Length: 362
Image (cartoon, rainbow, N blue to C red; front, side, top):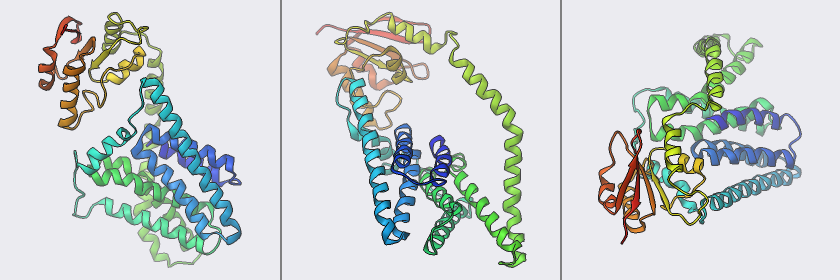
């Protein structure tokens, strides 16, 4: 949820000044990079911004609708441009046209095929209150917009509420409490802001004071979480510092040993050399070694469907790349690949279990 949370800060900056084509394009580019980074969290953030602009057009006067339409067109053009450039980059990097629809493969597996699905609990559960908060936030914005130009408060409420609904879709598919914690933060944020709004109305006698009692649980929840965050802040900084310092650490690790093992047995400058790697994290090996895979489709750990696993095994047997490197999973090679490996000769193996094969003649 990095891009959704950071986008909230950028959205505040966006609505705090005149909304120009340049600022709209800049924000749209950032949000589209979020889609490239993670489709499941990037789409809700971009969708929130698009929803805000659409509703701004719908509730605006006739004289301002054309201006809003131009901003919407700028968003569309920015998204298409960034995605096209990303496609061109992948095609150049991969040495072949990128199969565009593969980008949605995991969404099809999880949301359509139902892999790893956990149903929403039907008993009373916090997710029900979460949806109430989001709907209340959206309705609150629409009411404010119908009375004129809504304040920044209601614009932020709309943005977070729509984004929360988008992030909730992931929990809706896999209703695990750990997933809920990652998707519920927009509801907590929105609930605290709406509660503060209600408290102000009560204190100026625009609402019955007895309603203050209903807000105590919300404020107590917020105070506890803020206090815990402040308490954990030093350790968070310490962990961040340690992670940053490890970036430049040249200590040999299992991964680096495997990289050197592969590098010593290939010719990276030979663009015609057919190389395949079947190992956990194989995409990082290709990136580090600056080589292209001779095989297509999901890798050994990304193959959730049996058809994908079998297709990869079939490619091993049919294409027979010159050099093949296989990393064991839980100490062994998946059985589906064993028959295809009969067409290769085991040449070497390092201490980490990374095996090097040459394709047999014929």
